Amino acid sequence: MDNISRRSFLMFATGAISAPHALPPWPEIAEVPRLLDHILLGSNDLDRGIAFVEEHTRVRAAFGGVHPGRGTENALLSLGERRYLEIIAPDPKQAGVEQYPVITKLAEPRLIGWAAHRDDLDEFAEQLRKQGIEFEGPQAGSRQRPDGKLLRWRALRLKDDHGGLLPFFIEWSRDSVHPSVDAPKGCTLTRFEAATPQREDLLHAIPRVQLDLHVQTFDHPSLRATVSSPMGQFSVAS
Image (tube, rainbow, N blue to C red; front, side, top):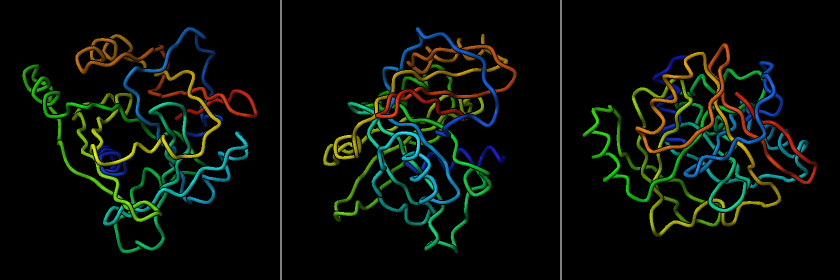
């Protein structure tokens, strides 16, 4: 997958049940990152992604809206206070817009990334500059909700996100209701973890961008979440 395309997609788009790659058991003591805002479940078709999640949770995600000029649409499901799952897929009505390979080529829905929230994105950007950490943004994004209200945010992405294991950072406009507030409820994110062959490198990078994230050693980069639902616990992985 082209890294620039994937990053650009995550930057502006503001996740699979049973990972395609077998992951080893991870410690139960892992916690959800304090600043985690949402996780992204990519699907090559939105209805398919919604049905997939509902099959494993008994909770049906609600249509969120489209991303004009970005070629995507989404559906949302709350994962607790200020946390949610975003199911994101190509928008068939934007066929003329470049479709990102990260979702169009997926054989099945899967986790493709995550976002961390900041209420001080400009200040955070300055702190990154002082450390010599390269990034793009903050850049503005928006989408219209089904009720006609405009949801607005700004996003910043790290140039080195360790293969997608680190998030992009999002600051929601003060006049926008956070998506977790009115998204369908019933599920809770209970764990969120990363795995990588370069564990020490990632552990060094995490505090530099003011995050907390449990990291395991594994033979390829991977994210994994555990969600509590009306059907019990299930795993979401990349």
